[in-house]
Image 1 (cartoon, rainbow, N blue to C red):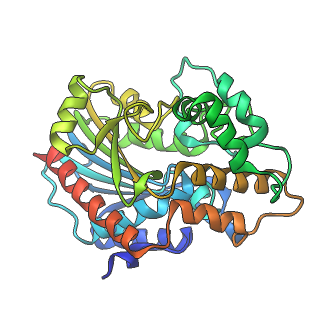
Image 2 (tube, rainbow, N blue to C red):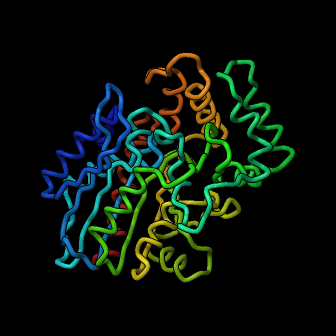
Image 3 (spheres, helix red, strand yellow):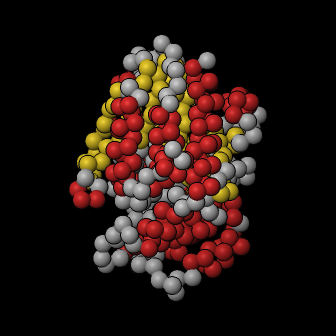
Length: 358
């Protein structure tokens, strides 16, 4: 099967293919049903394929779709993995999660049914869902204008002007790190833990509480050079975790830091949540970020789609130009890009398998 064949055209197709592949691989399938509905009132589920021990000490978790529309790349990798699942030791388990934000994948959005960026939603129990940076408030009138976009917005020109005044890295960190004051804006972290994240954390607590070593890969797209991946870790250069993962996974490893990598520091992210979820385990979490288009093009696609959803006077159909634009920047229609994603996705999975099961 050609690598492009692993890419699905929509969420419902990807869901069916994943469930069939999980069954064929001999996995136990768990489906976490959301209240939200997909197109044509279809069910939305976080589907979890569990292979191996039901009381594991070592666990490899492979997840995708936390950012909805980004989930097609991870879904493709997972389909290829389940065709030939690895041998799993008696005290270990492989857990494949598809997708963590089914609403966003189904409706071609990066956010969920509440306009929440789920990788900003996993705050610690003592953290308040409030606050935004001065930089975000500065950019908010441009990025989240309360009207449907038009050709007279001059979005790119205005953005370049702000970058010239404040610096690209400074502005990037201030804008995309997460905010809790503008519910209709981009990168909104929510007002409480959303249903999908809550169901997922509850499932982990029920089924993987015995784990002593957890290796996790979470797939994303949009940051970095086209077709290349960056392996983001919650640690700084020189710290033990960073050096250990750098030694295992190689030069693609980088911290969540705008000065050191394509990424930025975030609040309420899934990596921190998994560390809290397994307080007595060693957690090696890697975010595999595949590059697509330049960052300003990605930001423009996000802003246009969000403004159409929030402020257009009519419903935004799935074939609306803003949806097509958003899908293209996170799932490029390029054979070479898709082949690179499947190849590198499998390579990293093999390395993570060795780390988790050896």
